[in-house]
Length: 257
Image (cartoon, rainbow, N blue to C red; front, top):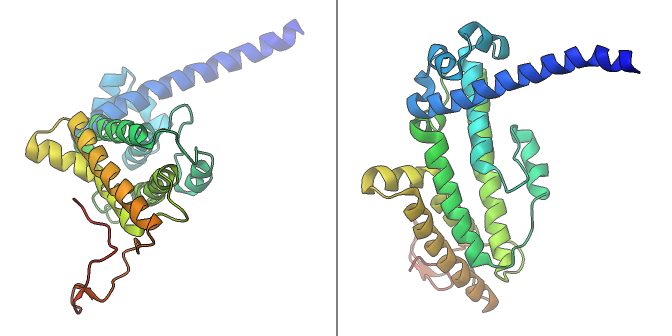
């Protein structure tokens, strides 16, 4: 028995060292990419992680693969639900979302905490890499195209999950109005974080609190209108003006107040 343990120990220690090295590279890569975007170099990451560029290329086959895996780490850090981690692949998102809570007791408190957390994480984790992450992928780079797919999947499925969770928790029946889901996508977006920070000098906390107040108002307005039997799904009614269409009334629509 002692011989078996001795045989396993060197392999275990080697694996542990590899994992520690990879963790150092991943943390350094996130910091450097947040500062320099996709122009971050392997040499910069090597210097911060205190490993050689050759070691980095043993873990990542190319610069594009390093960028792609770093962006996956960034999304994981931004989207992590408390104590539950988050998926690194778009194909795993649906099952992961199904495992998350389906209702919260204090929806207003949850929305405030959610918005502040999301905007703070996106500001800290993405940094200037936001512009590269949300730009169209470079032609010919399959791995960066994977990143674009992951980004879009997070936005679409993640926002629909959060809007539905808030809707149910506030007493809404059935599926949430599409306008409410779009409001979540707008007010919990990294674009909103960047715009209010860069153009208006807001802190991520202020951005989160502002967005939470707007979402709280829209949510309770939509639930109240739904309980009155009003149409909350953005279906045009007679009298409301559609782009390029005739006039329709705005009765029963969710309004920003």
